[in-house]
Amino acid sequence: MNQPNGRKHSGNVKGFPPDVRKSQEDGEPGWASGLRKLYNSVVDEPLPDSFQDLLKKLDDSDDA
Image (cartoon, rainbow, N blue to C red; front, side, top):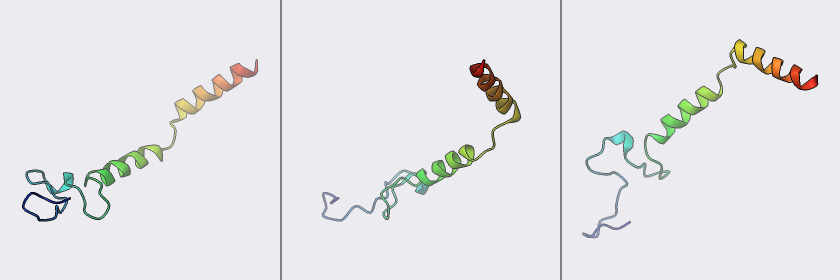
């Protein structure tokens, strides 16, 4: 994207810290990879035993 003065836009937005500026390489905001890591860590967490027990009870009640 060209700026009015003819310079190419580097993807860095003045006034924002570097972690929220757009990365030139992939076009994603800097915080996107951190959010993706957080999401993946939550998805990879094991299911608590109490949830496992509840799901088992629900499955057993469907069979009856």
